[in-house]
Image 1 (cartoon, one colour):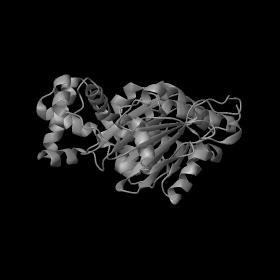
Image 2 (tube, helix red, strand yellow; image 1 turned 90 degrees about the vertical axis):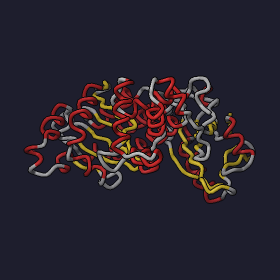
Image 3 (cartoon, helix red, strand yellow; image 1 turned 180 degrees about the vertical axis):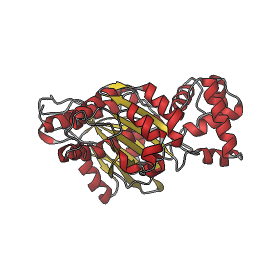
Image 4 (cartoon, one colour; image 1 turned 90 degrees about the horizontal axis):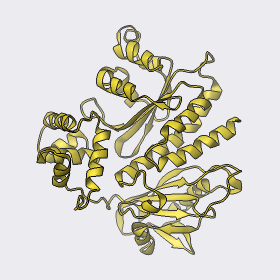
Amino acid sequence: MTAPHAFEHILASLHETVLGDSGWEATSALIDDALGSKGSFLVSGKGASHEDVEIFFAWFCFRGQRRSDLERAYFDLYHSIDERIPRLRRLPDSEIVPMSALYTESERKTSPAYNDALPISDCGDGLNVRLDGPDGSHTVWVIADPVDGDGWSSARLGTLRRLLPHIRQFVRVREALTNAQALGSSAAALLESGRCGVIYLDPRGRIVEANGPARALLRNRDGLADAAGRLHAATPRDDDRLQVLLAGALPRFGDQGTSGTMTVRRPARSARLALHVTPVGAGGREARPTRVAALVLVVDPLNRAPVDPDYVSAVLGLSPVEGHVAVMLAQGNTIRDTAAAMGRSPTTVRWHLQRIFAKLGISRQAELMRLVVSAADFPEGRR
């Protein structure tokens, strides 16, 4: 497979995976082949220190196989003492840094993380990169050691740099779908979501279908408009940017489309809409055109349906206080934010979190988020 074809194959796999609740293993295997690496570690989270860090998801994958054992070992034994982590948080966005550069000469001799964890996960000669995310979140992508002795050639680094904006967009869309409780939904089920707007476009950019929240925005010209069956933003400046995004997602001549994100102004509201534009279906010149070719996911920060903490407590078998802690953390609040809202100390909130983990048999906040989302989807779980 030629390099351009391999890159398009990766993008197509990313676009297919982003809407589902699985598939990253296969996508990461394609990336491993393109980069000549043994694997990678993709983690998304929020927080400025070990005390208030929240991990949304963390995936260790090696040549298409997820290594949950390495994930657990790293977070249980090394994450809190890894000298590299605070330096990673301070890295400039999209800067690629060798693993050894994030440890001092002394630490490379004595650090358990450097001397034990990295060799186990084949990351001693790996690369690190941090990507800014929305609302203060960030994504860290660690590329494991090269599979051969050629090292990190300029060609491999060039491929990695080309992938970074697509990885960033992949994480953004997944987080938006997770917050809308729509991750893993089929195209038809996604249209039934009431927590985000969903608009499907055909290969020529015409609106095929839209769900209730999206139709309301279009009808009221609340940031978006339907002009003769085509999607437009309400203001000329935003519309120019939107048309560029749509052209990238719906390229001519069968090329693989690209994803993108933007915000749009609203005439009567201060809170902007966030738009995530993603190609749908197989790409490449050999692909046949389909009726639906792109998805526009519209996130309205004013349209967050509340979750009843008491109901979540009953479903998950938690105390009322634990239920409130679980819901607040699952909705993206930090431990400090949760403590302030509940009038308790961060230490108390962390103590409740550990009790929640013990009761539910889990060890990470990403798992807690999935359980809270599932509980809230039960009948009458949302108020």
